[in-house]
Image (tube, rainbow, N blue to C red; front, side, top):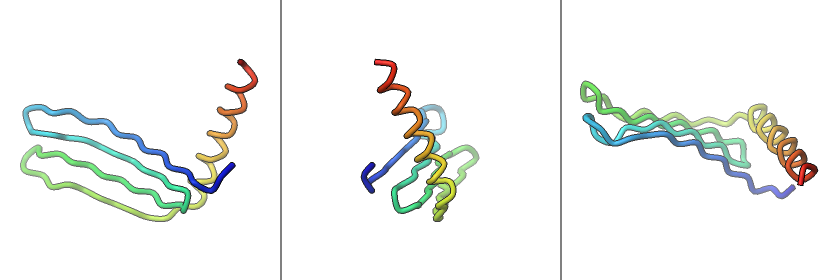
Length: 74
């Protein structure tokens, strides 16, 4: 498997309080990013970023397992 890996999860909507969303990203360099935007009660955007090799290795293992199951079931 190559060194390039990028996974992003996004969920959001546009409603009474504007565009609200939550987002997670993990990259091949072990970077984990989190964003949460809510305008409820004039709240501000929350952004966090860090490096977590253990979490990256777990995601990589799970994706490899899923890929093998899909390729064997075809």
